Image (cartoon, rainbow, N blue to C red; front, side, top):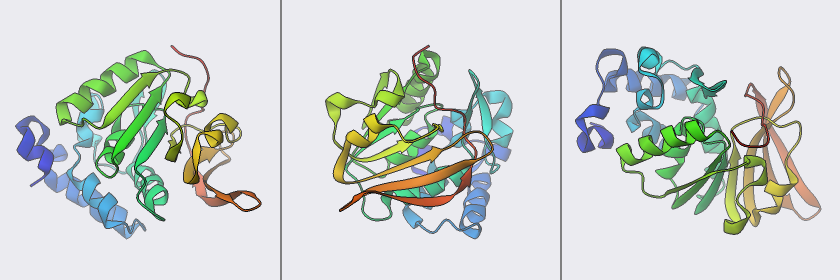
Length: 225
């Protein structure tokens, strides 16, 4: 039984949102190349149906992105798993910055793997909804901020790792500046239809960029709403 199910019966789900549905999703993710058992186990337990509108709850454990309002989406589970796996592959970071809270799902996954997550969201309504979900699930190691995510969170830098959940035309220098010397950044980069997931680390001769494959994300926008 999921830790979340034991904590609050409301998170258990029924039918298409049950633990059996979560287990099937995890089996599919493993079959499609996700290897980190820590990531798979966290996602097995986390009730994704709480992060989307009730009308879409029956689709929560499909491996697909779903709308969450305000022109945004909750990412495909495989993408969440792959980005998380890439972020912690070399070592488990202690302090992580997330740019783009969205529904809060990616942040909730990270919060069960690292000591502290700092998350920034430009759309106030999405952030307020995500905060309610964090409280419901008892995730106390998340700090959140309503701000332009492209600016990061300079007051709390440097971060051991940074994850960006929307695609910019290029990597934001402000975020690279907030990365610890031995840190890791994972972000989608490029225009719609030609986006690539990048993992970036500092090297002796500058930033080392590694392509992790093609992806599709909403655009990384500036300002706040």
